Image (cartoon, rainbow, N blue to C red; front, side, top):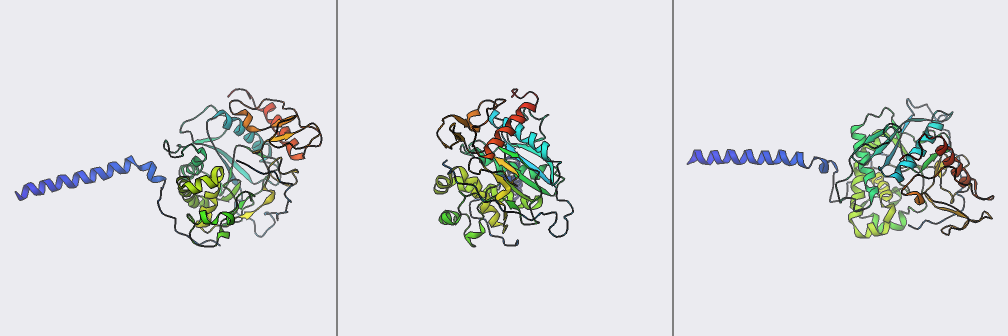
Amino acid sequence: MMRGRKGIGRVAIFLIVALVIGSCFAIHNLSTLLLITKPSEISVHHGSGRQVEPLVKITEDPNPKRAGSPRPNPKFHVAVTATDSTYSKWQCRIMYYWYNRVKDLPGSDMGGFTRVLHSGQPDNLMGEIPTFVVDPLPPGVDQGYIVLNRPWAFVQWLEKATIKEEYVLMAEPDHLFVNPLPNLAQGKNPAAYPFFYIQPTENEKIIRKFYPKGSISNVDPIGSSPVIMAKALLKEIAPTWMNVSLQIKSDPEADNTFDWVQEMYAYAIASALHGVKHNLHEHFMVQPPRDWEIGNSYIIHYTYGCDYNKKGELTYGKITDWHFDKRSFQHGPVPKDLPLPPPGVPESVVRLIEMVNEATANIPGWENL
């Protein structure tokens, strides 16, 4: 009788061990997601309505090459997350064209380039643009908000890819490099662009759900892009950024309030949880037609629609005589030789169209997507 019980015990132990091992393999990807149900611990070890506003005053940054001792390797890797949609592809092609045009110019610290493709499978741009394929979130997790795949894509890329540069620029497909970009990051102080619509103090009640302690001023008014950051630091922050993104999406109040910028808030909160403060650079990029002049800015971000009448007057949101909006080309590439805007339109808008036209004229097989 005792032998029988021992035998049954051994079988039970074997079955439990087998189930545990099997479960580990079965949930490996989801465990990597680090889905958490309670707020992250605070670490302090480191010191769709968009308004059109007038020109942001451009501030001068000290040249990082002249500030203190030179860093051993200031080069940064340009990383852009993307889907395999036609809409994403044509933007990535134009972005990569302008990366190649400016990366070796004087003043540039731009290193390699990677399109982090979160489709789970290769596409037809693999031979044209350096690409690293990662998995999308499991079905249903993003709840139709595809931007949730962005932090998950970075987690996978940083874990699996070989990246020789010590710094990373997180960029987006609708970024055009208008001037050679130096490494604006300073060690553990990343460089970021301040967005006027990211307002932590005005949303403190909601943010406290995910950042329960510490001054709300620790949450920077930024998104995850453009940001230049030490690769090792980004690898620390990325899982938290992913977790907070998923938590916000699962919270009805936060989801409704933050809407299309919730992933941006998630990155800002995640950085604060890690005690990371960003140096804010207003001239990191311009966003036509909100910003009128290029000045010494480095990136054109064409997220807004541009609407003007023949007098060169802004008619934002109302299509009259001249119109450009990337969303007009969801199912096919932007056509070659776009008409230039009327006289009197701000420099940023004119330069945007000129840059798009130059890229589409010089990229082989432009219409083939």
